[in-house]
Image (tube, rainbow, N blue to C red; front, side):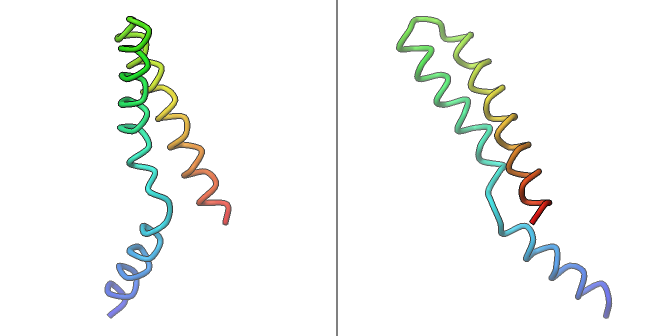
Amino acid sequence: MKKKVVSRKKKKEEKGVASGLVVPAGIFIGMGLGFLYNHLVAGLFLGMGAGFLLASLFELFKKNK
């Protein structure tokens, strides 16, 4: 019985901010900017870094609530 209660609580917590989508969004934004400025690899790395940074910040703020 306790396992069901714990799994329901975890599902409710996972419905918060979709931080898992921040990294791919950052990559695509970086790719677009890289194409625009003819520096594709640099744009991809900057977008990926920004995505990981934002995802970790979202997780940090979600835990503080």
